Length: 308
Image 1 (spheres, rainbow, N blue to C red):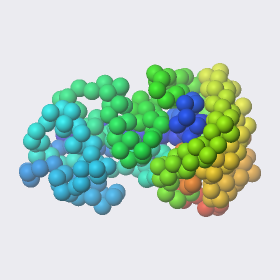
Image 2 (image 1 turned 180 degrees about the vertical axis):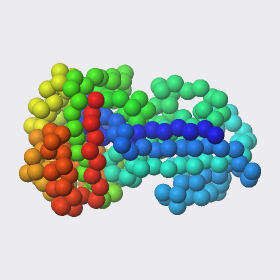
Image 3 (image 1 turned 30 degrees about the vertical axis):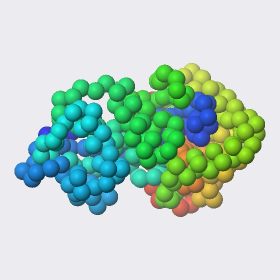
Image 4 (image 1 turned 90 degrees about the horizontal axis):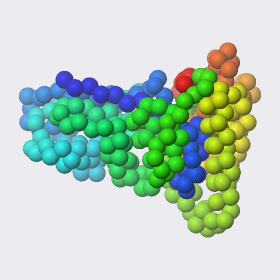
């Protein structure tokens, strides 16, 4: 038996602007994770069991661009596994799908790690990350690469597209409450809409992306120096710019406002927007009140996580 796992992730600052060369900050969320277990099977073929999405199929019965099948086919090609041995691949995940928590990237990373271990095909984190990014491109068009990077390294990341990965240290741990609208938020759609805005008025949106880039750099400096209490205002500013970008939604805005009223130092949407998750910065003593307020305002799921 071979087992591998990968955490969820949240973007703290910089979503959407990261696609246009500005930095973003993201961190792993270890309270949720994708898990893959591979065992030898008596049945011929590679059998995939993913109860969370009601999938119980043999690999070759799935289309080649199926999210899970594409990972396995690409791994077999890379590792020159042909024909594949008789396998049973069990996939489970506690990460909500299409919510901005990196569900797809986590499944890909956990799956390719498990396959690499099972077939004794050593892969470095860099190789796993590059592999996962290629899979993300199949499903998201022009992804930033941030999901696969944070999920692969399981560390806070300062990310600039096309530049070497920078992990960074957290001066003092801080607490984030994550509120899920329960509305699926396909990244491809919101990324595409922002691109249309940018193409229609590049000068305007480049200025907005510059503002977000400055927020991200300041946030990293605050996190590294342990001044996390100063992040609240930066979160609020970042959310305002994301609203201007049309990627928020009434549901996200209501949760953001509820968190602030319940005592959060700051709050913003996290991820692609139009649904999915928001995050709030809280003192640990205030987390319970913020959680209660988010649930009362309609959050379908709430996670409290510590960064660092």
